[in-house]
Image (tube, one colour):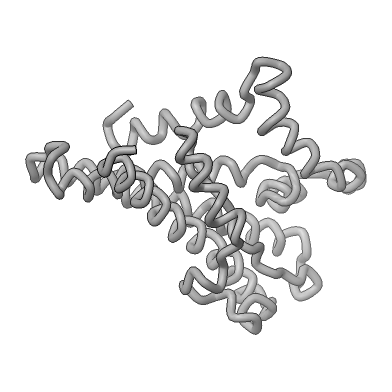
Length: 222
C-alpha cells in the first residue's frame, strides 16, 4: 500500500465518522423536541464521537469496506428512543426516524456544492494539498448520500422501518410488524448472500440509481 493510498483510506475513515455521528444526534435531538428525553439523559445529544462509536459498526466495518473498494458506510450505537413519550407514536417515530437521513441530505448538499466552489476558484491538481480538501468535500457528500439512502431501506433496524409505518393502514401495520422480526435476516441476505448466490447486487443497483445521479447533480461529476 502506497503512502497516498494509506492517506486516502485514513481520510475516508475520518470523514465517515462525523457523517454517522450527525446522523445519530439528529435522531436524538428530534426525539427530544418531541418530548422524549431518553437520548439527552444518556448523553447522546453530544457531537463527541466517543459517545456514539460502536467498535464494529463505526470502526471496523467502514475500514473493511473502504479497503475492499466499497462505500465506507457504517453505523453507530443506536440512539435510544421511547415511543411512549410521543403524543402521536406513529408520527413521532416517523419524524425521529427521518431526522437522520434528512440531516445526511443537508450535509451532502452543502459539501457537494462546496466541491464546485473549490474547482471554480482554485486550480486543483492531485499533487496539491487542495486536492485533499476537494476529496474530503466530495467524499463527505458521497458518504452522506450513501448513509441516507441505505438507512431509508424499510427494514429493521434501519430508519426506513420508522418512516414506512406512517404510510401504512392499521391492517398493513399488523402484517408489517409480523415481518419486522426477520428484518435483519432479510437485510443480511440482500447485502451479502444475493451478490454471492444470485449474481445480483441489489444494494449496488439501488445506490447507483439513487446516490450516483444526485452526486452528479451536486458536484457536476459522474
